[in-house]
Image (cartoon, rainbow over all chains, first blue to last red; front, side):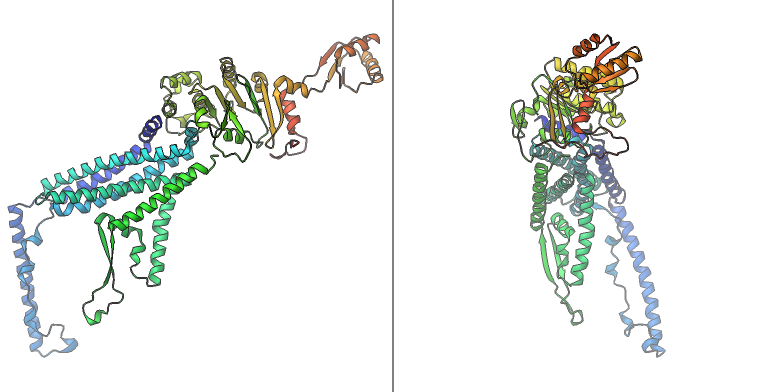
Length: 337
Length: 294
């Protein structure tokens, strides 16, 4: 237990951890504040204003259409044909449907919790994952580069115990932070919906769905944190984690996409990592292959491939297990010089 | 290499001879390729977790997380090792860092980091203290404090293994030494034994006049002693008993003004054993040292 206590203290004693958490909070708060000010509550007054605006726009469009129809008719009457006539053959078809100018289309943006909260969870998870990746990598990377790890091993020579305790403390802390932050995020957007939107139709089913999405988001944050930790542990340097991740996500992924595209591989997105993140957060991603469509023959039914959150979960688990095991093996076997 | 309990043992060797590697291997930081090691009677590295609580060690240059204070650094180690926090204050006092306890390690000089490293090694109240170059970076006062500290610790019953290049210090504070070269032991034993084994029996005999010097040269050469004359004295090699020389010269009516056995020090023995004495006009390379006979 003493090592657990020491590692928990070490994690939160580091200024880097505190600063990164503050930066993360600041970014998340900025997003929430932005949502607050870019939305407003829809009342009878706003509806009336929208209706007026819709009517005005309709009248304006109708006048323009009438002028255009008149010009069209004049052109046909003058006997212009072919390229000289830029108007449609049937001038009476020039009309403005009134149903396109409903008040709904002219309402200001409003935050409807039921439909608009879930997409923000992806933003929340993505930002938190980024922050925790950096904290996770630095937590062990700085220990290696500063010599702190060697000092610690002079006290606790069971290397695997040290490795898994550090990882466990990190993930436990990230889980606690993730749960608290997710609760605050939900509360903040609930407040935004109350003040500048609507909380209607948020049934227990909606809450269950939100809870599941947030759980998957926190799981993504945990995986990202563990990946940062293990990469920095294997490379014994924080920058190794950043370098490898940037290399894999940017260079390798772009290279793979370019190569697969060149060979006209179907559903090439299934080889792109972000597809799986998208599927994980959104429960599924449907990939379409339109390469065999003949659009000149009319409507095309593209072939589809569905990536589910279960597929993504398996991929993340595989990456996690491999990296954690390689990290543990390295920790156990390599000399500390 | 054997270190008796309660002794201060000097572990010496030229740069690159393997001192730090040996200490790292003992402390489980490097996997041994072969051989056997025991610490406090138990084979290591297998039993290291059992004995580590009784061993305080600093290996090579002191390295700490630069943004923590000295207090925090020791406090975290104390937590990790189940040591009461009150001990942190005690070792900061012992290491002379009491007034800098709240300063970040990155503001410390090498000598202060060294003191912090010694403090961290003492934190556990160890039975065995392993210090790799503890005087590195210390000022003269610090070196003397370190020497006094080692003495006090040894008197309290602690066993101390000390790796250092300051051979004068080692000679003053160590009971026994091990000297290695290119990873092999070239000498071991108590300091006095090692010095005696490499004593050349050289005697310096001084005279007041040149006439006495001339007579003495004649008498001593005739008696078969290898004599090296100097301005007002001669150097005699392979002298077992200085009284023989005194008797011989007295019989010839010559009375020396000085009769001094030339004693060897640890530095000269070290340079001789490791063959690392500087040679005028030559640049010795780091791995150029004595190869022990297998």
